[in-house]
Length: 204
Image 1 (tube, rainbow, N blue to C red):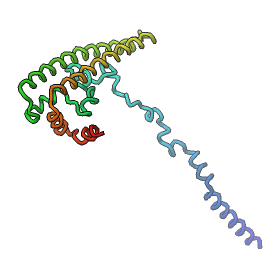
Image 2 (cartoon, one colour; image 1 turned 90 degrees about the vertical axis):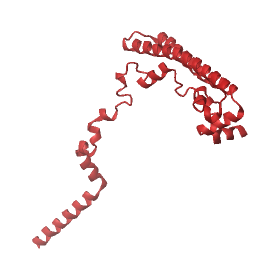
Image 3 (tube, rainbow, N blue to C red; image 1 turned 30 degrees about the horizontal axis):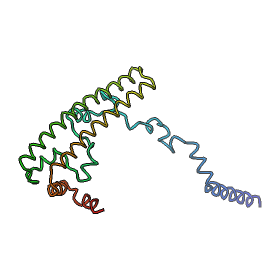
Image 4 (spheres, one colour; image 1 turned 60 degrees about the vertical axis):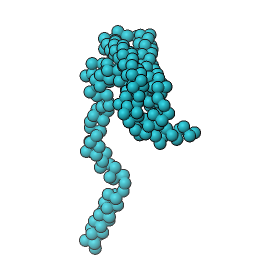
């Protein structure tokens, strides 16, 4: 009879152990005992917070990549004329590149070449000023020599230069449109892959 009681007690104990191990709280307790193993990322919080700007601190001018500096020095558009270009108003440089396909006449070519040269000179001049302005702002922060008023003045100056530079490219597109026939503009947009979108806009 005593032997039977011992076996019954053992059976009850084993059953309780199975029930406890199946309970959700049991597995939580086990994970809580080993937080680093369960969440390895938690052991290295700094690596998860690395900035997307990492590496840019080595730039000479923090706000400008070397490619952007080169574009500004060369007077390139850098997307400044997209409102014109993508609405069917061509730029002089690309028209000259497509001169044969667009059947550009000698007088048109001469006017486009002058326009392109003027645009480049103005863009290079403004681009050089913009590089200096960004370099000055960068140095002021690096040397901790700027206050709120200085930031406002510097950023207004930079914004003005950016606006003037963009206007140079957009005005060149307007002047180019005035030199071309409707047929040449349509041919330009087809050659550049804009025909479907520009024609849809004009219909509306």
